[in-house]
Amino acid sequence: MRRRTLRGAERTPLDEHPDVLICGASFAGLAVARELAGSGADVLVVDRYEIGERATSACAAPTPWLHAMGVERAIRQEIPYMAFHTPHGSARFRLPWSWSSFDYRELCRALWEQTDARFEIATVTSPGAAPEARDPAGRLRPAGRAAGVADGETPVSTDRGALRAPLVVDALGWRRVLAPGPNVQPPDAAISRGLEVHPHGGGTDLDIWIDRSLVRSGYAWSVPADGEQRVGVGSYEPRDHVKEPTRELARRLDVDAVRYQGNWFPHRLRAATEDGVFFAGDSAGHCFPLSGEGIRTAFYFGIACGRELRAVVRGEASRDDALARYDAFSAAHAPAFARALAVQRAIPRIPPRALTALLGLMGRERLCRRAFSWYLEQAHPRFASAG
Ligand SMILES: Cc1cc2nc3c(=O)[nH]c(=O)nc-3n(C[C@H](O)[C@H](O)[C@H](O)COP(=O)(O)OP(=O)(O)OC[C@H]3O[C@@H](n4cnc5c(N)ncnc54)[C@H](O)[C@@H]3O)c2cc1C
Image 1 (cartoon, helix red, strand yellow):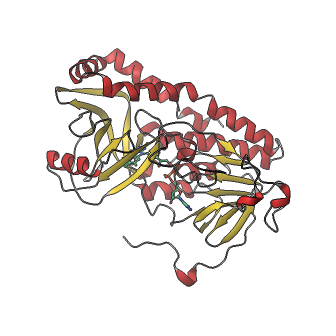
Image 2: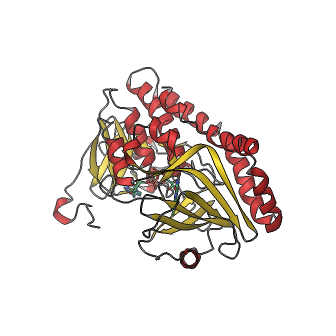
Image 3: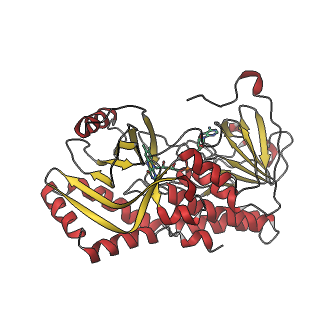
């Protein structure tokens, strides 16, 4: 694929101070921008790549969420069934709602069309101030502000120069680039790793394997996407490699291990605001721990963040109010995330035969409905239309 990142002389200096600066143009960043459409704010979105250029996942999300976001044209295949496999058997569930695999570029375009933001390609390198401009807690000292940065503005350094805005969002993914101070990174962070291949293929179900001969602590998947299969392995243990397990899964499924794509994804909530910056999506650990599902939660928390920013832009709230409210909103989800993390930790300890029996039980209609309805409820698509 031709990389559309600006190169050399095209990378002209940027000197921008919009009302809202959104760093990251994927699920979370575009959801924030979409929520600000029509607010009258000058919104600038920056990303190191062109919008939609680099898919960051297997691109499967609950179908009702894709409709709620108005991006259904990106759907490649609707998937009403999930099948769980262990070395001792399989259980197939018809879900109370379906998954859909989608085309990443098309989805990003569809989100972008719903915004009235501006876009620039730029790589965010750090929070904007030099380390000596921060106090021991990592907060910016007023006297240490970069030249031209007014009180109440947050500076952001990029490879095209310093940007500043009163409202700044870090939707940059797991690296949490705009966090102040030392930023815990893999393998020490509470983070999982995933890798997948994208061979030609088909299928009707979203298949999940829980098989320790593939991955000690984690799971493997195959997502059909209308002529393509997204086949991969995720490990909750960041020190365990996933390349060989992914190849092994491709061998077992008799598909080609081609078109690799991998990344880290967090499995613990982190502070949703820090040092005057709003964090949404993976940067705030908004990826659901058990399933590693982070697209709908990036939408959900991105929308919540966008609504708080909108109130500030309209003069209905101060920036500090918005920071406090968004932080509290995110923190209110901690119990559900903790429960999911506890199940994530428990699954590898369950003897495989007992796990197979449990999955069989889950296949019963009432239990399946209850479990998957609870799961969707944690970030329900009705939230998208409630604003
Ligand atoms: C292999 C794999 C498969 C997955 N499959 C699924 C799935 O099917 N369904 C699901 O719900 N979740 C899935 N996930 C998790 C999901 O990908 C993430 O939770 C989700 O992408 C988070 O969205 P985000 O917008 O917060 O961050 P990201 O999607 O990671 O987007 C971050 C954006 O910031 C940009 N960026 C990063 N650093 C910089 C920088 N320094 N300067 C400028 N721009 C920068 C990136 O280019 C990108 O556009 C998967 C994860 C992996 C690793």
